[in-house]
Amino acid sequence: MPTPRILRLVVAILVSLAANAVSAQVAPTPVNHVFQFMQSGVCTAWSDGQPSKATSYLWIPENCQRVRGLLILCANVPEHRLVGHELIRRVCAANDLAIVWSTPSFMNFKRTEPGKKKMSDEWATTVAFLQQQLDALAATSGYAEIATAPWLPIGESGHLLMVDALVETQPERCLAGVWLKNNHLPSKNRTVPALVVYGTGQEWSQDKSDIRTQWNAISKAYDGILDQRAKNPDWPLSYVIDGHSGHFDCSERLTAYLARYIDAVAKARLSIAGSPTLKPVNLATGFVADLPVPGHENKSVIPAARPTPASTPAALPWYFNQAAATEAQAFAAINWQAETQLPVFLDAEGKPRPHDFNGVTNLKSVPFEADGLTFTVRGTLAETIPAGFLNAGETLARGPATPELEWLCGPIEPLGDGRFRIALDRVWLGGGATYVALRQAGTPAIRGIVQPAGVDLRGALRNTTGQPQKITFAPPADVRANSAPVPLSATSDSGLPVSFFVVAGPAVIKDGHLALTAIPPRTKFPVTVTVAAWQWGRRTAPAVKMAEIVQQSFKITAP
Image (cartoon, rainbow, N blue to C red):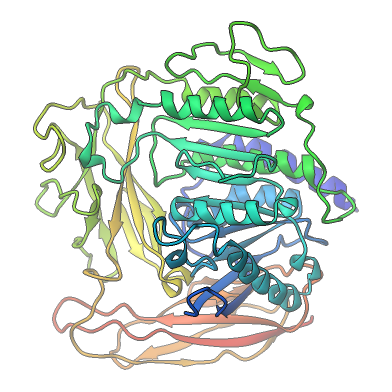
């Protein structure tokens, strides 16, 4: 029988192969992301005394004997995609990393808004609330090391501040920090390894500036990174500039890069013996690279231990290995003087929808199919700068292809060809948003671009009028591990079909049944499985309101 070390090596090889063949993967989907355990809690320790709620979900690799570290994420936009992504989970399995995903978040933004209080005022409370969740998950799961394992926090948008909180408060416990898409650095810490990804084409408030030029004004941002490396030469700061992207998305290519970063930092910092004490980073074993942005056309990748040539800036972004440095350069190796194109979303009549949500589109109406759940989103390329934008009416470039629709986050299942189906999941319970995107490839002369749109599931698209309905959901009986699929029985008094999703537990929904998944070997029995039954309602006559979701739980006992 292969040893655990051999198995990890095999998985690592598979991760590497998969990461280099991103285009061959199935499109990411929110359906059936397995989290075996969950913990809800209330924090009352905030300075204003007002409580906040959080629910944290824990996934442990199915063959993991001992958890060596934790990815920590909360619910913004790309996090939903990342926590269940095949590449991320494979690399976690290869390195015995678990994933903790919090929705609603353990971070309370009411107490971290600039101008109201210092953002650091509540960091200790944020970390203490997270620790409370981890202590409970350690006890529930049977993996006691969940309470003490090192952290790798990953955040986007508002949850960049969550990464700050963990890195600044407990740097000795952080493998690294990952700050996605904004040009954001931690407030003070210059010791914890950092991966900062900057999507230069920021979509928020894009209507306030010239979209043809705002994406390539990057000199100040990059000079700031070089300055930080010069002032902190021992800081392992890796940097990626994605000129074809902005604030919201995490492309398959970027996801593959992130997976490789997780693998590299885990191998460099985690103890083989399982100790929570992290190994220091040896910067001399890494590589530095100048990124090919305007004014920095030098494309050499240099071993960090070798003196920097006189023609190259003295302090450059640092990378764990040559491949990471080369790929970072490849991200930035675009035509920074390219023309701009702009995908726009179309309404049912084929007219461009307005950018009515801080410069992006909010889909408040979509054409539903007969099932009341499936809808289609269409897009095209704008001929001119849209109304309401700076320089509206001026001509835009247009690439040769048609923009492609993709899922970014939220409880909708991508079906292909711009079709999506409502598929409620734990994000709905946590209050998370829903986004899709139009991705348009570039050419040597025209910039590639991504444009997001909110899907207003909780507002305009929710069925709030018509006949009320009520779900009756019989709780499943307890079962033993390795049992056959568990039948689920639920009805609505409206007569409409009822759907299900797994809130938490080692199980997935298949053909209306609950199929148990493999249970990590040190799991503490019995294991609780919680299933939710839902019915979206109907807009066509006779209209039916969305039903209140009903949850039932049962136990999996030891085999």
